[in-house]
Image (cartoon, rainbow, N blue to C red):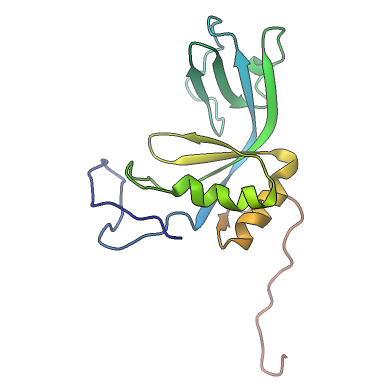
Length: 175
């Protein structure tokens, strides 16, 4: 089901969308490199600094009265196990390409629905520009198969799991 796009709003440079038509922004995901960890700290514990340009695919700090969650590169030494830290992962990440309008409705629903049908748990994180989906590394191939079966294209050359067989052009005389 296509996601309805509201009338155009100015989101700044780089935001390009033809809002005069219905657009389906849920038909493509971009596979991101690397593996991601999600850590839980007590709410009052300082977290390791993110640093200026770590090169990680995704980094985030989310603080609530109950906890502080940190999303970092799985290999980052700052996320090494500590007695006061719970660590989950590694996760693989996919994001919706481009910048999404804040008033889009149903983007995550349409991307998560195939995962639910395939029994794949997912963590969702939204940034100012787009939505990210994190899936346990062991279930990455199942997630991609579910998305492809639902008509969602996966952009990237780094396959998760076995590569698809090459596609051969049909020639005269082929059945």
